[in-house]
Length: 328
Image (cartoon, rainbow, N blue to C red; front, side, top):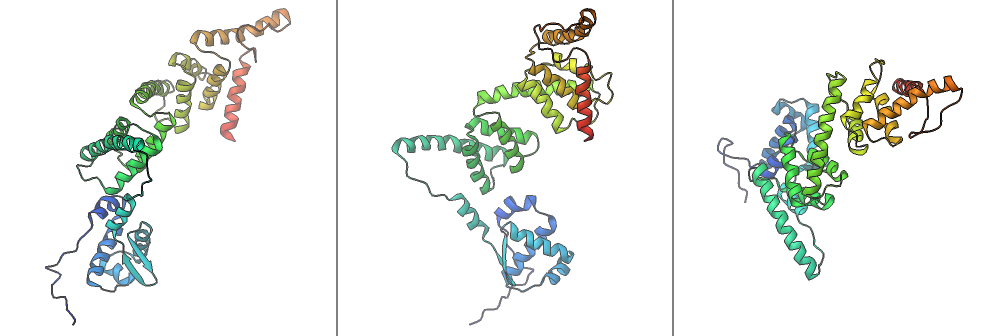
């Protein structure tokens, strides 16, 4: 027997998987969404359609149709072999991603894992309700689980991670991963580590603003320049009172670069200078050195600081090297 479809398209519906709407559609080009929806309705009726016919029907350029089909195939929404196109079962695909075989654990390990999972599930539920209105896409559950294992974050740090990204209007997996990598590189695992990091970050942020103001920078600082300032603050432990001394040395050199400033501050750190007073004494001892050489005919003995050079020619050499580096 052959049963003929009797419903007019006027009375029929085409189901779109919620997983497609939640997982794939937000980052998908609008034309590709149109192509996928058209594939759904053609698949439902078992119709054959060429790329040219699809382009005409959707009012899309033929090249865009080809690009769209390739994209849908690359993200696993459709599969193609020869001239046959199959729509993938997105629900089954997500279930296979979520399901993972568990190895056998000792009673102690099982108890620990149960308690840990209980805490994690509580945080994941809070993330779902607070940032996804209770409809968090399934893949986020496995990603959060992976982030817990990879970065060793405690539950409160994971929740703060989402709050941070949400506040910065960048609640995407790429941005969350970038922030998580940064926190992990700072050895952050618990709230105590995170509090200390925020204190250091605020200090860096304040000094960065002062540096930009002193240099009269209208454009934002580059990533390299921010890395330099972060090193001065977090690694060298220098406050703005010391950094400002180096900034003042650029007044007589309009072409001074950030490399020049960085070279000066790195030189201070390399010589073990820790305070503004030590930096000023170091500079004063070098300025005094040429006068002693002229009067006595001999270089002075080493004092509290290693005397690499005995006049401003040393800073001039740093400036020249920075200019050469910039032009090379």
